[in-house]
Amino acid sequence: MTFARELRDGSAFALRAFLADKDAVTLVSDLLALDDEGLCAVVSRAPMKHAQLAGLQRNARVVLENASDR
Image (cartoon, rainbow, N blue to C red):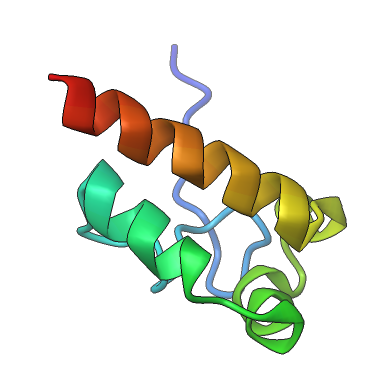
């Protein structure tokens, strides 16, 4: 018995185009380029909509630093 189901179109849990097919470095670079309006467009109707831009960008900088250490 399986409980997995396909997500409906427009589901709040569907992968956003902004996130699709990006590696970590590309994704965090795109996050660093966002302004408040851009963030609202990316996360509208998403569980992540309560995130604040400054915190996301802080975390993105840490990811870039960690990636450059490798």
